[in-house]
Amino acid sequence: MADILLVEDDDYKLNDIQKVIDLRCRRSVERAASVTAALRAVSLRDYELVVLDMSLPTFDISGPGGGGSPQGQGGIEVLRLAGRLRNKSRFVIVTQYPDIEINGYDISLSDSGAILSEKFGLNIVDCILYEFDKPDWQIPFIDIVQRIGLK
Image (cartoon, rainbow, N blue to C red):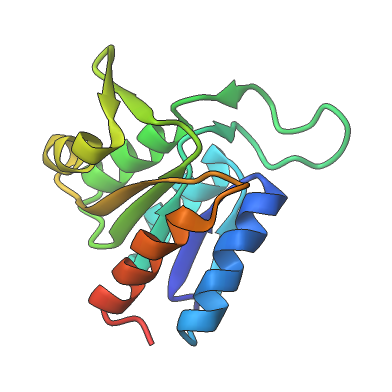
């Protein structure tokens, strides 16, 4: 069984995150590339860490036009179900957007984690801005991996 669930549909971003995980810890990683796959995964078990993107397709992409409708807040659906199921995983949100829409308001990433933790009763460790052309996102991500003791 995997220790880390990596919920990401973008292969480039996925590979960047996977490289950091591989360099910093020896944990098995399971991938979910859609809202449906992520919902299934968090409903089955808790993970040591769930790395969650906010914008996800409805279904796994299986060819041209596959994946269904993109959901800009697909990650919120994953958090909602995890909260309802009292999932004990630690979550880190890694997104390319500087804010997250919560209850109709755009909330900065620096405030989103605490608000979403309270809203869904989850352990959301942090929200990190990913920029493909800047490695700055790696610093807080590595800090989280070390802080929670993933080796």
